[in-house]
Amino acid sequence: MSWNYRVVHRHRRGEEFYAIYEVYYDPDGEVDGITAGPVYPVGEDRQELEANIKNYVAALGKPILEYSDIVEEVSDG
Image 1 (cartoon, rainbow, N blue to C red):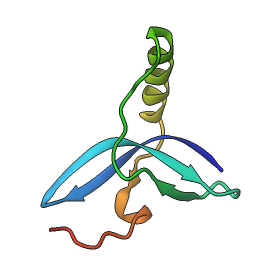
Image 2 (image 1 turned 90 degrees about the vertical axis):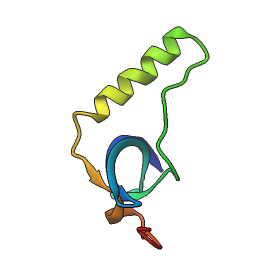
Image 3 (image 1 turned 90 degrees about the horizontal axis):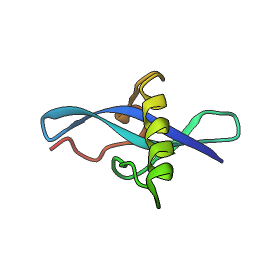
């Protein structure tokens, strides 16, 4: 299974927002799931943090995904 960071558009509790999630793909390259919540950049040192941030910036250049297309939400309340 592969993954990358992607911008995801989400409606929750009457609000909408965009955030970066880890998105996982099946062997055919189709979206198979995402992390339970948005993720944030982290690294064991400055260089690792910088590399991670570059991956976040790369996510901004990819098409935006809709949360509701990936995850079946129980309620929008």
